[in-house]
Amino acid sequence: MKVYFLLLSSLCLLSIQAQVFSFESKEDSNTITHRVLMDDTYFVETLYRSDSANFILTRGGFYTIKRNTIQVNFEFNSNFEKDGLKQMDFKKTKDWKKISSPPKDLNGKWLMAGRMTPEGERRRDTSGPRKTMKFLLEGFFQWIAFNTETFQFFGSGGGYYTAVDGKYTEHIEYFSRDNTRVGAALPFDYELKGTDWHHQGLSSKGAPIYEIWSLRN
Image (cartoon, rainbow, N blue to C red; front, side, top):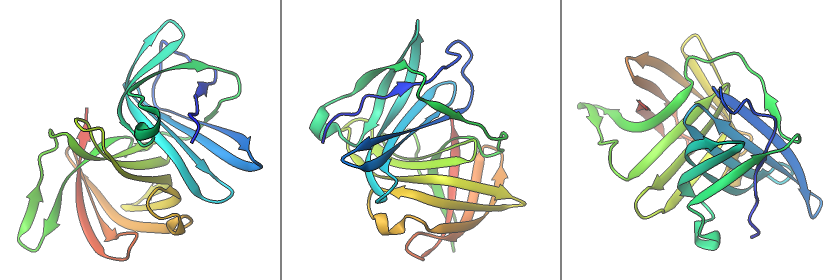
């Protein structure tokens, strides 16, 4: 697989807040969607074929800005075994388009922090290298499972979501493990409790779940 070098559109690089960007390109007559989720510290880039629903790659991590360059130190890179990249510089270009959306109360980087069981809350340590993170930004979501020490990538999926009156619904646009899930809508009941996000419903496989996610700095 070739390496895709992301080029960003006109960014206000000195005052970046929550932003989502999108760009489409062509390869062998396939339409490739590039999507970037970017808050004031973290950057995630994802590529998938929107025509065939095939996932291509995702990579992301914390970033710094030097002049007009965004320097990202990857925490994960699904293409790492092929390209070996742990860091990358991103330049701007006019082709990238910002997707505007009203602010959402679930904006943030959420780490899987536990589950509710019949015996009560079962928490997990979120400080370890093995992480499952869900990045929600301006109506878009992406989950990524990865290991920051071994650089293993375990899977990712994402799309757009709605969150109204305690009802949170994910609309899947790409899924690295099983592209037959693309197009599905997964509804959940949700509640914010301090820095925790509780949501319960059915997983993409139809199993009942009650997850607890903790907000990451």
